[in-house]
Image: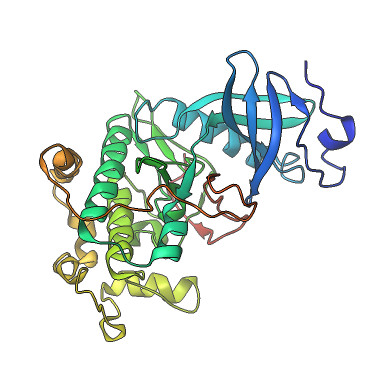
Length: 328
């Protein structure tokens, strides 16, 4: 039975740190971080004696059926994907008015944190991480799931250098009857720096959109900055459509130069074999001797001083919402 206090569980109550309280089978040890939708806690699952990460939907959003639906959908989308490079979901539920997801706890940092601390990465490091993410996306595509928010914040790096894709809150799922389901009807959300042109336009997307976002992420990893930047979401979107990177800002390392041969403007014409290409990239680590240094991939200096807590950043409420016609 949950032992969360009624005040803490009340959507109308104050924002209270739930550390130390019991939520069903989970003892909330301490809060790891806060996102636009949820607070994330390190917890101990008593029955299995293991540490997990528990995401709790923020109280003010728990009153909105759309956000509750999206929150549950995230768990359902991720739960159907069992893969070493995807953060695993263990449980989803509601107790005492609290909507929660219990999922795999990963020690380390996310890719955004790593890039902020270290800058552009060497090619071997990029291949090591990107091949793992590609494998995760290939698995998602096979299951009919499009993530729709691939970006450095949602790529987690464990202490051993393993990469894991997190946060399926914006995913689109095709069921066995080939009907499409998404988190919010008539609304597309994402991060403009990494969104494919068709996602910005609100058109129907498929796994190729994730591949585009991974390509943008790859460029940022190698060049130390995204290929398209602007003062607001609209200006960034225009740059994606134009398909021209900011070459005048320079690529001192030259590592991203080869990516210029891939024209983002032709993304809508990706060949049917693109998923096969993704699988080949994913298999590259088995035959590629990486060399180079991967030092620091799993190291993190966090605000709470524990040097090993990892959470994926939640997309902010209302962050870059665009109208779309591909309703569920």
